[in-house]
Amino acid sequence: MNIFVWIIMISIFLYTIGYSIELWKDKNKVGSFAVFTLALSIVVVPFLSVLR
Image 1 (cartoon, rainbow, N blue to C red):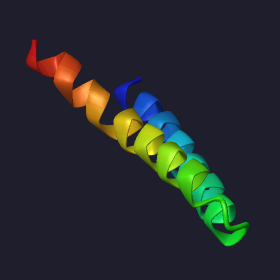
Image 2 (image 1 turned 180 degrees about the horizontal axis):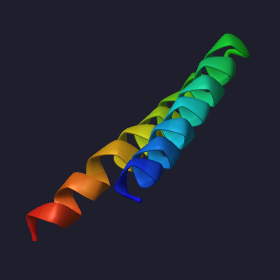
Image 3 (image 1 turned 120 degrees about the vertical axis):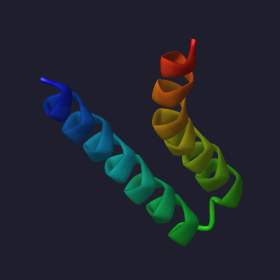
């Protein structure tokens, strides 16, 4: 079950990074940065919840 959750999290991260790249190509730099920040939070938040 733990591996399944990691696969889902990584797939959401990759999809979000891909969307950020598309925004960058469309010259929407602010939106791309915001989506990239969201993608990073998808990766970082699970580690912060484990520490508590």
